[in-house]
Length: 289
View 1 (cartoon, one colour):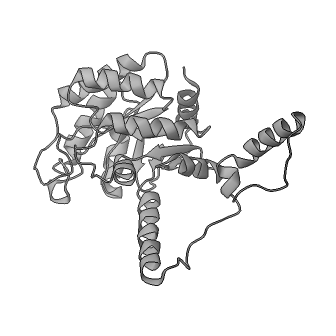
View 2 (cartoon, helix red, strand yellow):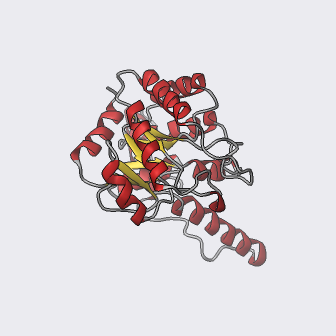
């Protein structure tokens, strides 16, 4: 079992609700770990928007997601959960992409049942239950004994009028959730489902339920996303306009106490200083800001 998957499974098995906080880059992964979160989460929309300036509606590839997820996972000691969208279009895609997630050091992902192109103006609906089960089974087979955590995302409670592929049926959400657990999912997430709907769904699930974006009682964890990348982009837009209009950015914060610790600067400073002293090279008490 991989180290990060073991950490994530230990959190789930402990039974105490935890938050996997948004980490859309290596430094934001370090930040959520620094402040004390026990896990991190990379959303597809956060990653596609922030790193590639494209929407998460089927145009964004899993290879791009895995590339960024690997960078984030490598920068942290806490486990990372990634949004894996539909894991491609076939069970072969699901198998190979899962192998890539495992090899990249990701602790787990969630795979969804909406038909591509998703979250778009196309009324697409959800894939057949059997197709989703076979996708999960392919992921489970590819993960082998790594302990990789598979979360099935059921979008039944994400109705078409809100841009999703579901119909809003609690009964169908329960039917799908049970089927996905039977196929090997470790947890289920029902985006957009109301607290009242969750009260009906959770007792019926044979595996833990997690939420996307908000906390609820009796759930294993919250996958928290959206607040980080959007705020960073909005602030950048604000300061760019300030620079354009006034020739300077008065509201910018060029330094903060944790800045150098978060990028490991002291470690590299010590290495370079030791090398310089031991080889008779000059040193100085400061470094470039």
